[in-house]
Length: 499
Image (cartoon, one colour):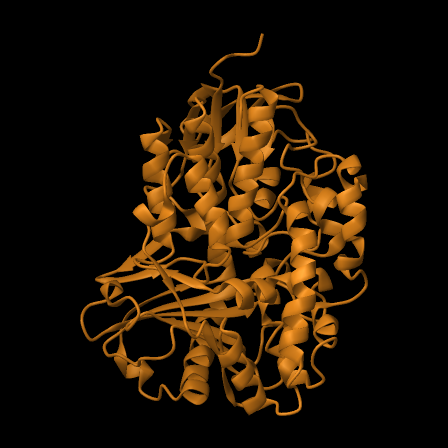
């Protein structure tokens, strides 16, 4: 007979692991999280610089209903613990030609922006919303279901959805169904960067991502998106989950291919019935498993997988308010070259693309009165490019500051910096255990999705389950939450507990 109250260990207190912890602890499992840092969240945690507060990673929050459902299934209501602010506009784009474009989830306002910027594209938005809604309705159930067996890909629902994968067409190609102007297409394809991909390489199936934004909206969480992880950790503990902070796992312990526990960095052995790996998949596969145990995802084979790009981060405490839009995305003037350079392993030149978040008016408690916490993200190659960031960091910082001056007219920004922090791809790999600094994990090419992605019930061992962007359904905060829910459901099925 299976243990009535199995002990489930979760490596990492990131969003996927926290979702699993909330759900499993509610259902009576003994859940322990092992987190190497002193706070939850990992890449969804918080950076404090004096009295300035920044999210480490994700700042866009969409698909709120997934988080609502996880809270409800864990015995809570998300609105009781998180303060959601729906953004309008969702963000501002600065197009390659320098023109600004506001992006709304409101049809009338969005249509007005399209007509203002692209007068010949009057019918595109309606076509986009109608057709991409069908893609969303057909693909989301598949993304929310585990794909542990090839037979999961042969059921009626999957076969019915095949046309919506738009095989051999890119996201940029798909937008050609709705718009003729290339800049109009770009304004609906930058979301490929959420997956760390080029819009000319990102599978057309991901047309559902811009659709989700336009149909459901984008949110900010008061206090920053790190507040989600903070509250999820707190509520998991209310459900009797134990979180071991400052507890780094050195290795997973096996008997043959059966995982039986974990060993901490100080040598302590902890016996477990099942293990959920929430740490970065590439890091975990290459560092936490015994040598030669893995075949499909051995270090040698892992090194041949397609990876996402990385990001160069600047967190600036600014001694004034610029009052930018909450989210601003700036395209390089030669965007296609910029993207091509990144995915060919070349450090972008002075013509960079970048993203800026300014919360000074929407969430003023993240900085002292009259000051601004500027979050600046620049896509760059991952560490397979072998860029010497110790050598390049200072120069690339200046390139980024110059771009802020030239593209957003922040002419005095250097004089206004009170405090700052930089995170390079090398830092992502060293300090955050991100494999090759590829912050969006394994690439999202169709040959690395669904059954072809590492399975939520890990196929190479026994008693190992996966959450996070490196497993199904993929990168992005909502899908990472979903991976945690899938892993929890699989464990409940294993022990015949009602989910």
